[in-house]
Image 1 (cartoon, rainbow, N blue to C red):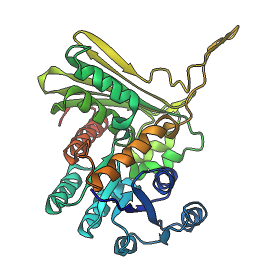
Image 2 (image 1 turned 30 degrees about the vertical axis):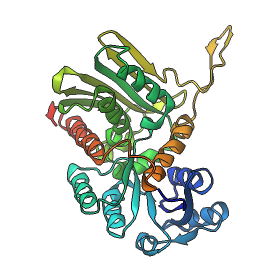
Image 3 (image 1 turned 180 degrees about the vertical axis):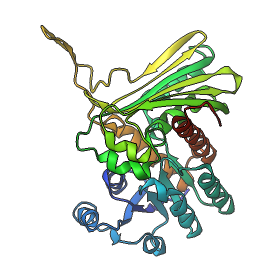
Length: 340
């Protein structure tokens, strides 16, 4: 372990990148943000006003050449994740990369090979739900045997409808609704079930509101079923069209009980009742829902880079999430049950 701060550079300053940048700049113990990179002047201008003395770059390779930078947080479009992770490893940097690791299994495997070639480098993929206190509590209950043997998971990632259709513009590079949204549910399912191997998947979906998604073969509401070795099953629902807010929840059913996380999209425990019904405030988006978990996630990455703690998840976990997500997307397009 070193007493020195870990010098981190960040690539990508969109909505998620800005959240991570502020966390690293002001709130992550053991780290300091020394550089930021974006090809967009608007994003670099934001960084000038919000990130203090961090060096700014418009080119990812220039960021990697900065001798101050010891670790890189990659929060760029998904299509760039694998290549940029490999480039950062080869430049001698630790890497935190947002999910998914890649849009195909081959890309994940290239990253795995690069990580093996640089065993002194830390590589971590941002599956933030593993750091959420409520998901951690549910996992602890499962590990303690409170619900018996878990065998079925129902999990959903449902975003509030965006009438401006940001995600429609994002869809050509997102990998589709299952790779962009359900990849979190896939990772949670494997984690809660003890990392079983997926065998078969089936998916179906529809466009309820956003017809522009048809141009790239995507949907705004999708359902998927995954069959795992040993008999466990998972059911996933992803939506871009919720009227009430961001609604993320998971239920794990076991032989002696069940545990649920996040039902109802509640912002807090205040509930009002009147002649029009029962009401509670709802979460606006996934950033509000997992604000604490995003901080814990980056803290875990920095701790691993500083030699203080092992990584809580592996590149193999990220590869399997992509493998299952790709198979689900293939099933959506083919209309057939697909093997994984």
